Amino acid sequence: MDFLHSLLAVSAEELISTSVLALLLVAAWGGDKASRAISIAAFAVLVGAAVLALPALCGSVGGQASAAFGGHIKLDAFAAYAKLLIYAGAGATLVIAPAYFDRFGAMRAEFPLLVLLAALGMGIMVSANDLLTLYIGLELNSLAAYVLAAFLRADGRSAEAGLKYFVLGSLASGILLYGISLTYGFTGTTSFDGVRVALGTGALSIGATFGLVFVLAGLAFKISAAPFHMWTPDVYEGAPAPVTAFFATAPKVAALALLMRVTLDAFGGQSAAWQQIVIFAALLSIVIGALGAIGQDNIKRLLAYSSINNVGFMLIGLAAGTVAGASAMLVYLAIYVVSSVAAFVVVLALRDAEGKPVESIAALGGLSRTRPALAAALAVVMFSLAGIPPLFGFWGKFLVFQAAVQAHLVVLAALGIAASVIGAFYYLKVVKVIYFDEVTDTVQGQSDTANTVLLFATSVFLSPLGYLLTVGLGNYAGKAAAALFHFV
Image (cartoon, rainbow, N blue to C red; front, side):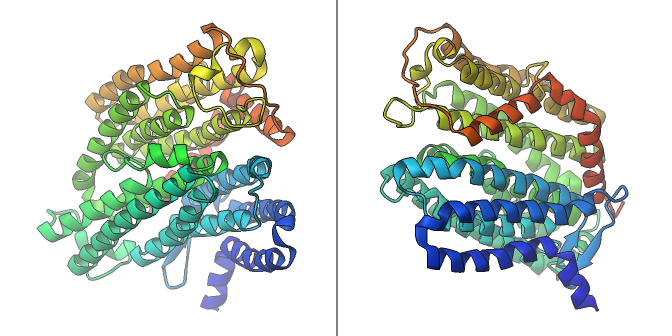
């Protein structure tokens, strides 16, 4: 009965894994001609997985948590919330990818399968209740991501991005695995609950401290937090645009959710130890992200530094170490996912008369006069990412700063607010180029129907109309955050 319960508990993961095997056979028989049909089927699988994950989020506060496979997997409101965001990011990637790859004659049946495999690994990551389960899910996601980064084999930039991501990702995985081994050596267990009990609330030994530091360093790479951000600009620029959109959404959600579960659950009794690391990473990410973006002329590299910058703001919510801080971080994460999808849909629409991608910011001069709707959508995205009211992106920053102040981290909140002003500069630079510079008339390609619909929906979400969702989004984020403090 326990095994049957475990199988029922991971029904979303089972649906994805069995579907991947079935679609793999379809891909083998149908070849690349079946790639679009496989993409549609993969999207339907993600919708089904989201439906299976939803009940855990709609339960009572704290989420009707249940354990599976001897406590290695935890199904609670937090895991369900993260999975819904992961499936949303992966689903958006499957919507925008076919038309992009068709223009290069590079759409292959393996693409949607790799996205599904990555989503499977990410689902295991956010449900992990054991350090070994954590690592298995992380590697399943990473192995698929390495291939996706180099998916355009004929493009030197894509191959370079895949190689860089593989080398640096392997290094980060080694660091994480070493931290896990140290943690196990000094606690005698790999279970999150066991680690929390073994470490207690007293002073950490030197070995346990090193274990904590190495684990957080490995996870910091996965979320592209400074000073482990070096791979992000090159990979974002070199990888195909749909893959970059995927990296900016689903894996980011999974890695941040995993970081939250590790710090607030496994190391929950040692908040004084990990808070210092998180605060340092938050401030450094905000500053490096803001300053690094100022000199960028490539829109994808600018969005890479924007990602680093926004991760810093989200870490402020984690640094608070409270339910309010975790809830604020989850709300911010949801808004960031929608903003990233909107940003990369715009990037995909930036094409010249020959259909080649236009990535230079200078080439967008006067876009508001030639493509007013596209320029307006890009302006909404930029203002939202900058956190400028009344766009919905402001709400996420407001919540994390409020949580920091309530946790008596006033200096951290003040520094974050000051740094956000610097970050606003490079977002406004893009708006200035598209509205006030001379017309270059470089962007002449037409948007695909699916991309247009997706861009309209995300723009409405980021507009002031998004504030209508604050109550519902806040309630679900609160339930998910409360699940991480079950031991209090």
